[in-house]
Image (cartoon, rainbow, N blue to C red; front, side):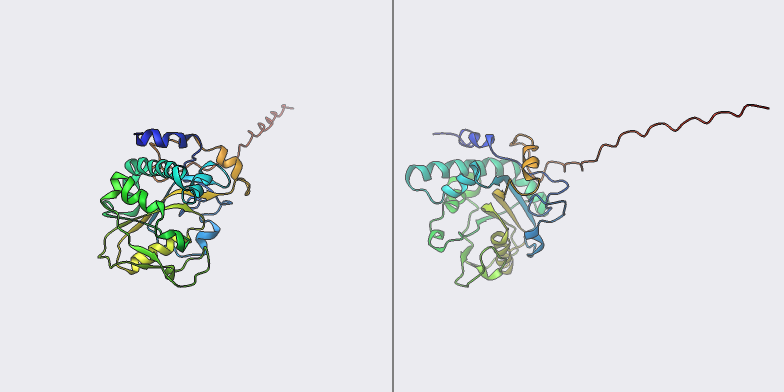
Length: 263
């Protein structure tokens, strides 16, 4: 049987680790045009106490396709992709769950749950819940299904506490919320709102892929400038990148004043 390291290793070749710094949203790590928060984060409540994306998921590229295909494929292809993504999530959490706990201001997360599927027909057997509740050893014993989709009609990709209902009440416990993809953040923030309304304490989120478009503004240049993916670093424990300062050429020296010649 393949190990976690062997299953996750191929993803190192195309994952891109987010890094804090100028022009990076301080909430979700989206690339911005020089602003502190991205457009989506300015238009919805910030309910989550911390967010950690494992990698950028660039539209139409390898991680994007894997995250879409693992829940739409069947048979051997679905099992292979599910096992690989479970290994990515396991390997990340094994090293960096403490980073997320520190960022959220708690010692740890006694409960781990997942964001329900965006499609009601798929939610009952969503592979993300299998990954967190069965495949990943370090989350298996803490996993609980705390949320389900509500029957309320909610505008897609919009923040709404009415999107989900809680399965049971909570008593102030910190909760680690896991999702596969973050696009606008509406699903994860809505899920966090529902959990807190049910009595949860701190709620922090890990997402496998933070969706970005390479063609937007300077994204292509900025994504190509990111260092090679490194399992020992995460978006929360790597120091922020310093601001880029323009290089200004030295000014020419001022002309020396000539001494007056005595008459």
